[in-house]
Image (tube, rainbow, N blue to C red):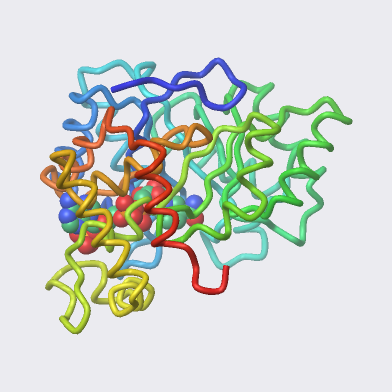
Length: 326
Ligand SMILES: NC(=O)c1ccc[n+]([C@@H]2O[C@H](COP(=O)([O-])OP(=O)(O)OC[C@H]3O[C@@H](n4cnc5c(N)ncnc54)[C@H](OP(=O)(O)O)[C@@H]3O)[C@@H](O)[C@H]2O)c1
């Protein structure tokens, strides 16, 4: 596994980050532990989670993915310091008015609760999950700056922020001498490009921000297991996900899969690995956040490590996956 600098920081993270949204949602605890073990055995050091994972699942109060990571870290023979643990706050963890948001009150509560669940003294990267238009950015950044000074979090990042808001936050941090967002976590894959490429990508290059894209396989669509006119495989995420089914029924989706397959065949790689390579070949990307329900799924993604596409291959994929109205 290659280790890459997270943006302009000195922090080194593995080129694949392990997402943990599936933990106790679509994979049980022992499978989640096996996935964590296999990822660590392969040299992965970068874990992504969030306090709200997976509050949407039946009988899940949220915080359960953090619990699983905390339990695994505690019982693992590997030292805590070996891992870069990224989590997020801002989502609703209760029904009260201050049980969500990016206010000082909620963020301090949320960080303390994540620390308890993760069984750790510090969080390496703390990300605001999505913008909170009710809270001034200045308040959010000052609270995060205080949490860094208190040693509870080490770096900060933003997820799902539009470019103008990231830039505004960077200006506030500079003007007030607060820590700054060092990374962004956008929704980005070869089927979902416009949101990141329109403005954020250039901003990340210019401001030297780390980029850790989520859903790099478009929720599993880019594994190639969904086909037009066929029902989603039993137990797959596509059974309850309209976006995945729409991709499968679209000409753009099918043409993109065909091109990924063609390029992969010539390189001895799978559709999924070629989709990850499309991200890994872009120098602005630090580490795609992969999701896996089984060790077998994880292993297929790990097969993308070190797989770089040529400029011509990237161009061919860019052309076939371009949005119709782009
Ligand atoms: N910041 C945010 O707002 C946000 C949002 C979403 C996710 N995230 C982060 O990003 C991580 C990854 O997101 P994601 O789960 O959407 O990523 P993804 O890589 O696009 O999708 C992962 C899913 O694809 C399927 N899959 C993976 N490998 C496969 C294989 N070899 N063959 C067939 N199917 C395979 C599995 O689903 P099935 O087996 O169920 O089909 C798996 O759960 C999350 O864990 C989380 O940490 C962040």
